[in-house]
Image (cartoon, rainbow, N blue to C red; front, side, top):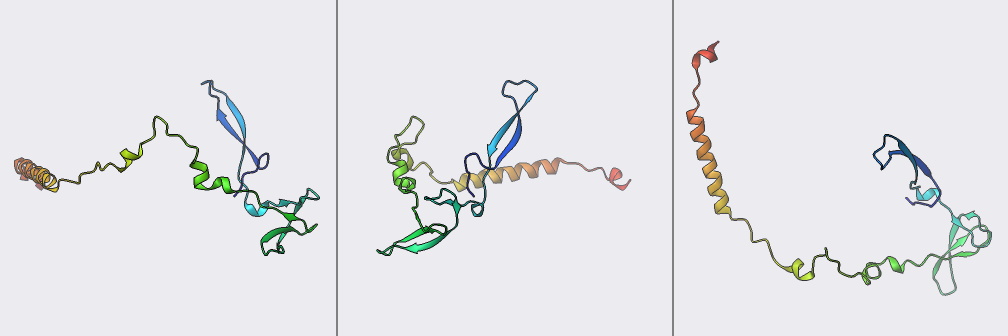
Length: 140
């Protein structure tokens, strides 16, 4: 799915931000399936289908079926994790690497949990022992 600016606009009614009982209609771009999108021929500037071709050095390229022009792929090196994060600076709400590697979980104290559960069972048994059932009410 791809989102294209100015294409596949849909309208949505939302409440106004000013807490007034009126609605606004917003236009929002919604995604299209990739099969409904065509590449643009670089010479004719019209949508075209493509075929796979090879250059003299053996590299695979996209070739327009209308004019035979090579359609270059866009540079996507900026999308790698390293290039996206190399300029990031730590903010005031970011966790420091030292705090990330610090071990804070010491494990569960199972003897304490067992003792608490045993005390709960004893208290429950004591309360159940105090319950009195009237046999006459049950027979009716």
